Image 1: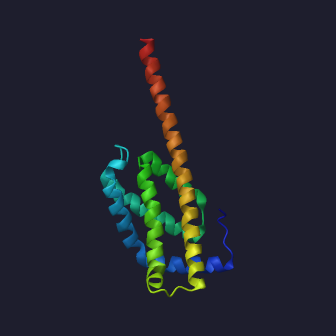
Image 2: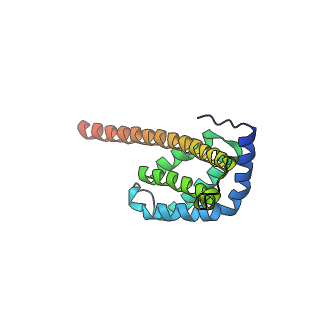
Amino acid sequence: MSDKLNGTESEIIKIVRDRFIKWQSELVDRISQTFLSMTFENRFTLHPRRLKEIAGDEVESLKKYFLTLDSAAAQELGKAHAFEGLGENTILALGKILHQFFFHQFFFHQFFFDKTTAQEFEILRVILKTVDSYLAAYLLGFIKGREDLTLKEQERLRKTVSTVQDR
């Protein structure tokens, strides 16, 4: 998926950025609650106190992504969170939270009352496209981080086995 936006899409993203600041703490709280409920889905090295900080990191990263569409930054955060020990199920839950949050903030009342226009559907499409692009970059970084972590653990294990065999 391309990170480039056309003129209309750029205007929609500006609207989202302006509203995002108002919702930021609510989104951090939702992500934090979900992460805490999934504490045991993560690696044992990740302390539960760190989960709220990670939730804040996620929201800040997404806010910056809406400003810059910088996939590299999202990938780096995903990689960092893989090294910290965030679990796969926790990451999948993050995607679900982001989709539900933006849908609810922008469209729930229109769909509920059957008042959605074509323009509102276009806004939803652009928002979800941007969130999906962010999540794709984040997941790519997470996967690369997990691969790197696995290789490091395998190398450490190989060295340990080699040392034991040499004795």
